[in-house]
Image (cartoon, rainbow, N blue to C red; front, side, top):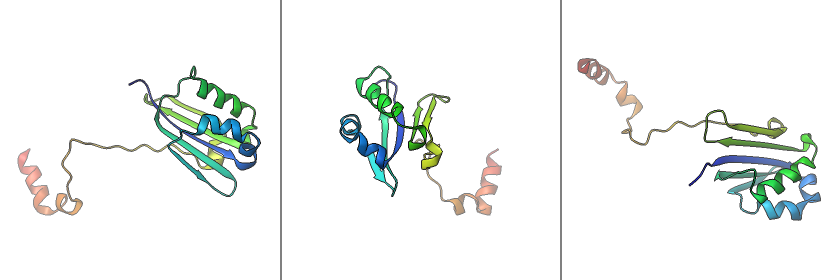
Length: 126
């Protein structure tokens, strides 16, 4: 399976269009794309973002040709501290959010869980 990352890139429209053909070659497989009045957004989820992959090398080369203010890049890997930022991701509202999920738990209704009877029941089991 391999090590995967989540990647988000925002590029000012003018900069994207200057190198549009080159960007299309390396960004065509993104999972989601969007736009604002000023920028295009591209995201990948569970992608193998290895520095030795030709597409990754080409994209990083293209980003180095752009002024840092004209793009934002964030890559989050599987390990806790594996976060990479380039350009100005905050200028494009690229943020990292963490979602915690438990797939093995049984869902409970909030009002039932905190009802007086259920709290008494929980205390009785201690």
